[in-house]
Length: 381
Image (cartoon, rainbow, N blue to C red):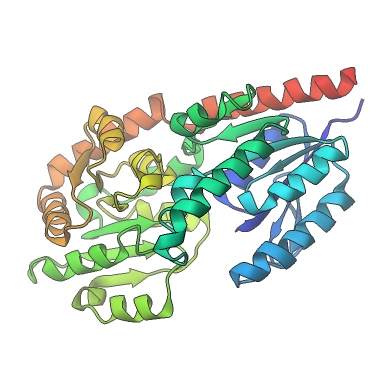
């Protein structure tokens, strides 16, 4: 009997998104499934036994939520897969249509959507609570119909388990083997640059302004730089304002880069920053970058959220600050850069925790088991 055909769908992310492609799709392909992913990519391709079906992604939000979603649906129907796995709330109608056609459909919930809406800068403040409540009802109603839900944190799972009993937590932990590639040839700690890094989507809510302002506060005698890697998701006005800050002179912005290039940056700096603002969707989040920093052997300078204190603090690999206060951020950066032996030991402790617990191996097993369960139902039908 041929392997079940699986198709992942995204209208927001790249087809080679770290979670979607590098973790989930490749894990499923290695487990013997026939896997394709529909998403933005320069062209159709086959990488690591995963077939990429390229679609054009519109840059403007309205067109992305209409024309891009239509392109995803059109290609999804062409794939005629047994199981579809979609990753964006705007694809809920596509998921429902595929389910109505008798397909197994998995919704991968990366964010707590109602809480996320409360912080959306493009929505008028007066409208956010009402829109959040409406989306909660719509999303919850749709999730009752789907074959399974995959969520990234226990707090999101708690919301959905009463709605759909096939809700599985698949943490966004790193692939240790790939994160560790090249570490044997990485510089000794003392040879690393006097630099810290932030990797991921660059937004004002993730403390871009505060990080840049902190760099301006550091002593002139400390030749520190901030390595930024990721796409800018900010307005032109905000971008211009941040670049006008004195601290920008110490910033190297690498733009959007692939995962291997990201890991090379992490292997050459002395700390990782994750300084999300204390907004509803951030307080219970478990960003991938925390575990990537830890896996790369870096101390983590993090927002002082209770959940993050439990994760990072229990491993003894972090310093916690108020993410709204550049002076506290600057103080933590200065401490890490001027105490190399302690920083290196913090990094070792974080890396040991990732090797022991916070890694993709156990998560991929849960994902593959879910697919095997759904595949058995396909065969029974």
